[in-house]
Length: 285
Image (cartoon, rainbow, N blue to C red; front, side, top):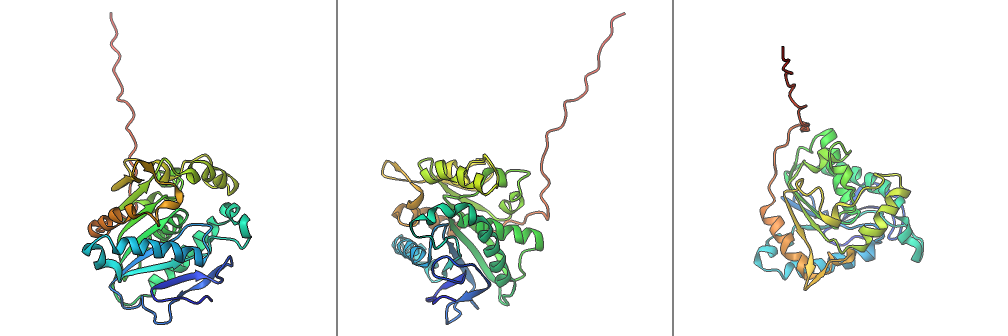
């Protein structure tokens, strides 16, 4: 158990490191219950609770300053904490390959919480880095077991997504999950973490070997409803810029105002090119 503030949800047992909790913990006032709209912020790996709180606070400040349209959504933003870090001191950055499994478990616990909701709720997901793996695994749970009865899935905003392109491209294991909601991808070719560290971490985890991250170049390019390369001034975003830069507020606000659900098929049928038509051979006599 950790001490949560208002509008906070957690599936972690410790402030630093720790395991995935068996049930989701809410703030003392259980603020999320009865809300008609939940906008979940999901941090990435190598974030303890203090790190994530700081990132979320900077995002909240920039978002609320983006104008009256953004202010409409501010009261529905909830901070989600999951154990994507190890209590290894300065070496915790090396734990990436060990955090994919907690990401999956965290998604399952979050799904169980959403399945127990009694009142209808509009759900938005705004995730960063490996938090996007939590988001995609949650949607995969919806694909496998059905979307919770109370949930109206409005969309996903993926920031610097540490999700393998091969996992969302057919026939990847997250392909159907990636089609379940309209998705906005904020990406940057200047992201050094995704360019250099992500392939190594994936290889160590034996997960989608050799695949590029979605958040590096926004691939698969024709897969997403909306995508935007992120810059400030003339500089491209690096991995840690998304929560703290003011430029993030505008596309997130646009995502929230235009994100509407689609009605996917139970299982989308992948398209395959037809074989070339047989050509009749003419014989000369």
